[in-house]
Amino acid sequence: MSTPVIDRTAPTEHPVLDVLADRWSPRAYDSETPIDEAKLSSALEAARWSPSANNSQPWRFIVARRGTELHRGIHSALMGFNQAWAGNAAALIVAVAETTNEEGAPISHAVYDLGQSVAHLSVQAHHDGLVVHQMSGFDPAAISELTDLGERFTPITVIALGELGDAGELPEALQERESAPRVRRPIDETLLANA
Image (cartoon, rainbow, N blue to C red):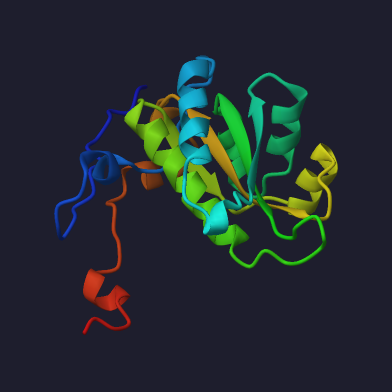
């Protein structure tokens, strides 16, 4: 039985761009449709052009398409309930921070800059009709071993990317999360100072 698509637009306190208000992180992915390569390329291009300190670009991405050994390996490194749904995503992308430079000096802004890059990827993908869900529940050591990452590189998140699927195909607990109201802490509780 198909679960109806509900309006997931964020109830913002102030106006924001539609692409930001409408973006959300579903767990229901179409398990048949392959990744649209043009849309994937555009998402990666948006990530490439995100800002970074001193234009250092301390981010890398590992892209695995469903049906490949790499996709299966990344999926197996996911933890908990992420394994119950993320395997259906057309692509799994590991976002990797370059945490030290070639001389071994720490890059203090690497994770921040990677986050900006992933945000750009997410907004572009959503604009193009794809859905994105970032996951922190994975085994970074398993990803590093699987992909032979050097010590300078740290896997930070795994991103599911693809077409929206039917939430009715998810386990019941996850179906409830797909339709739960979207909430955020109020702005006045988020600002530590606002003089």
